[in-house]
Image 1 (cartoon, rainbow, N blue to C red):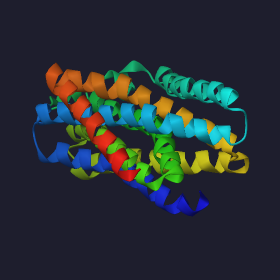
Image 2: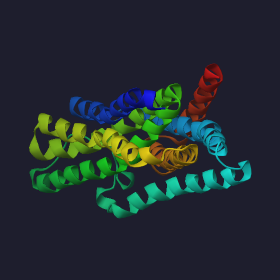
Image 3: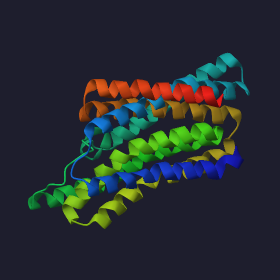
Image 4: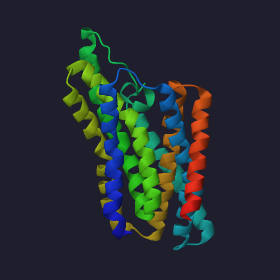
Length: 267
């Protein structure tokens, strides 16, 4: 696993810095193709749900069963799965709704009244902080997936990167409204994405002395829980908000199909 450390960290860095892509898109255009965004978010959710239940959870169970009895391993991985969901739910609860990217629209148009500049600047700053906090567990998800299976890590990194793009928009748009500085708006968005590799490094450093099959399998199950929560709490609601229901569901189903075929080809 240690031989995959730097590739896994590189994938985590690329996934996190995709917030910068979102900020560039937001600063280059006055509107977003919401149908495409809806489809893309649904597609990401489909990939994350399918890979969590079909690939990561079974792999976590097999890994834990290397150290303890199979029946007990099932209880441990199930507990870790819901523990991952609880972990990111607690993070959501600690971030006020106004600054929480899960509770606000992530797409805007480049129009603002001068009287709103102070409020928008504050919104941009707090959104950057909130997204950075949320990116910590996402960084763990990418890193530990890639550490376990580099091919799987590439898929997870691409999926996380895709859903980070609108988050980058969420930071860049209000900062640009308030400061009229594209450089500052891009910088804040770019820096918020660095929380993903930072979260991966901190998580790995804390867990490395204890990385037995039991701990590693439990972490994988927790990662699956985090990804399912992101898909259900963030990606699907955002997809529904930005476009038509059937477009979101079509993206979801296609995402599952693509993930299924890719896993079969990698088997």
